[in-house]
Image 1: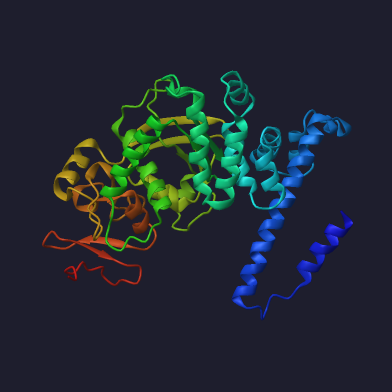
Image 2: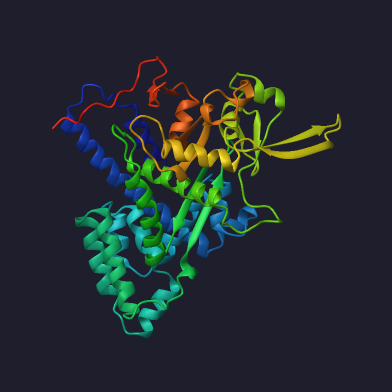
Length: 400
């Protein structure tokens, strides 16, 4: 191990400046192979530690717990290493390719995620030759793109059950959301083929209906915006199940002083599920929402709870929708059911809640307007959009 560490120290000490492109790429290829070999040895050692219950030496129940607590691996990564060690015992060709550096840890995981003890036992019961699949998978992993291996593994699953799984799609569905300290959320989604098709169809309808000129978002950003829009549509429709006599909605708690202060006020508002947002973001959400007054005592106990007041009444919204029909931001045109009613002059700053002071804006452009952009309606009834530098966004004829 000391020799390996010395070799890595020598690599890290090399000056890469002045290397040719070809030499740099050759070095990358060698390092990838070495990384694979180290990952293979780690997997083999972790499996040995699991079988011998080595984690008990440090008072832990499993090697997975040890990897998380002592090696600081994430729960997902620790599970992957343990899972891979278990499955490789049944596939010597994959194991050899992994040890030689030709197969990556991610490729091994493609097999390990799908093939466990139950599948191995099923194959033995049905007389399916695991060795044949092992050889094919090792060849695909070393000669084809990463995604090709998933199709090869699917062939094994099909061989186990030629008629396909029983029609209960809910068993394999998983949707995990993780909230971080700053309130942002990441997630992992696993769906059956039919469920995935439904989600793709719903998101695609929103993505394809929202393709403004000059859109530079990546596809993943478009999908994320579509997912939020889908939830926004459902919340606005009012058809979701009632929770404790209250329809699900977005809640923000913020002190009146922070709400009316024009400063950004980072971390001034607290949302219903615990995230904190800036006062500027709270003002954006308050543009088309309900306001509740709560007077707090010095010990933090509510003394008085006022009635909810709807900033934009249903009647006013209908009038704004009838006039504007869609998002008024230049080049957008998102449908009215995607839009909030925006106060041109915020009601916090004396702007009236009436038709003349209102405009339909989709979520993205509502955010833009609260961050420097501006929309105005000229005397002729035409909406105009201005950048933060006060230049107007003009939509000219398409170049053909």
